Structure formats: structure tokens, C-alpha cells
Image 1 (cartoon, one colour):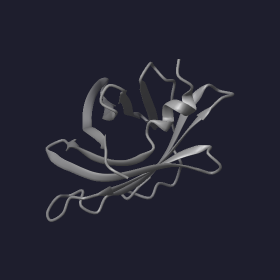
Image 2: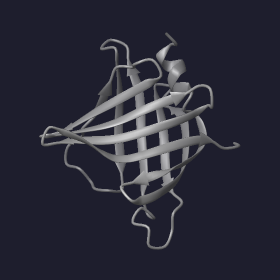
Image 3: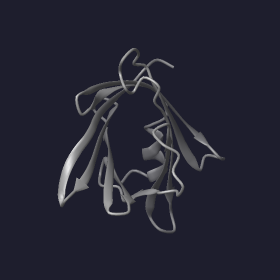
Image 4: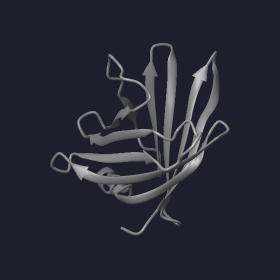
Amino acid sequence: MLDNHVFLDNLTGSWDLTGTMGDVPLHQQVRADWTLGGTFLRMYFKSLTGGDNPTSDYEAVYHIAYNESHQLFVMHLLDTTEIPLTCVMGTSTRQANEIPFLFEYGQTRFFNRFVWHPDTGSWTFIQSFEEAGETKIFATKEMVKTSE
């Protein structure tokens, strides 16, 4: 299996993200690079939508790393949706070309599944949550590399 740090390196660079959150179209610019001495991959997301789109002011920062001693990927997610009073970290074990992060917010389980497509050099993010024992899609996103 591809080294986990090398696998995360597939996220570096500049990206164009499109998709939907429910019926709301998404379009974001994404920049990913290594930070903190190459320990964390930082992904910065900025909305490119305008006008009446409810995501027009959205920004987010993900910090992703692999914890060797626990053999887990971890993700710290900060965004403009709210300012939480506690830090909920997503964790995951890699499954081939996927990293299915799980965030547990009390009774709510939120999933952010990263899927790498080596044949196209693109990523898919599928975000979902569990409600009353049923999994529901929150957002689907496709990320393709842009020229640097």
C-alpha cells in the first residue's frame, strides 16, 4: 500500500471544486500544501459563488495528518459556518484510495469521505450524516487540479 504521507501528497496543489450541497450549487477554489514542518497537509477552501448563493462567503481550512502511533488519519476542520466551543476531530483508517473521515458531534455522526481517482488525478468528497439510524447525503464534491 502506498505510504500514507505520499498518499496525502496527492492533495497538494491548486484545485477547482464543484458540486452540490442539497440543491445548492458549489464552486470553490482550493489550495493545499504541507505545513508545520511537513506534518500537516493544510487545505484552504474559498467559495467562488456570488450573488444569492448561500455559500458565497464560505471559507474553510482543513489540517490533515497521519498519526503513526495510532495508525489513524486525523482532520481538524475550521470553517465560517460557526465558531465551536469544542474541537471535534475527524479520524479514519485508509481503505485503498479512500479516507472516510468520521466526526462525532454528540448524537450526530458526520462523514467526509475523500476518494482519490488516480486515473484522472481528481478527488471526490462525499459528505453525509446519520439521522435516526439512516445515512443521508449532505454534499457531493468533485475536485480537479488547475494550473499552478
